[in-house]
Image (cartoon, rainbow, N blue to C red):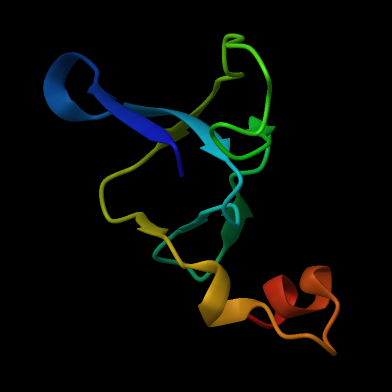
Amino acid sequence: MGRAQHRTGPGGRSRLVIYSNVGHPAPILLSPDGGCQLLDQATDPPLGARPEHVPRPQAGLSYLRGDTRVLDTDGLIERRDDDIALVVVRL
């Protein structure tokens, strides 16, 4: 993930993560009840892949106390013979 910023709302009950993903596998937000959400709404090519600077996309998502953000690296999940979408589902 290129950048993540966390904000806590009044009383510490509601939270917001603002993120931009630049060429890495999208993070996953896990909830304590076993649900998950792929943070893939603000993806862009790797840094330095464009000939000129352009603003990066950003997306925001609310999260709750107890949620876990899972980050991984390309080498952890990418394999030559596997479809990346299927690997993310298995993860």
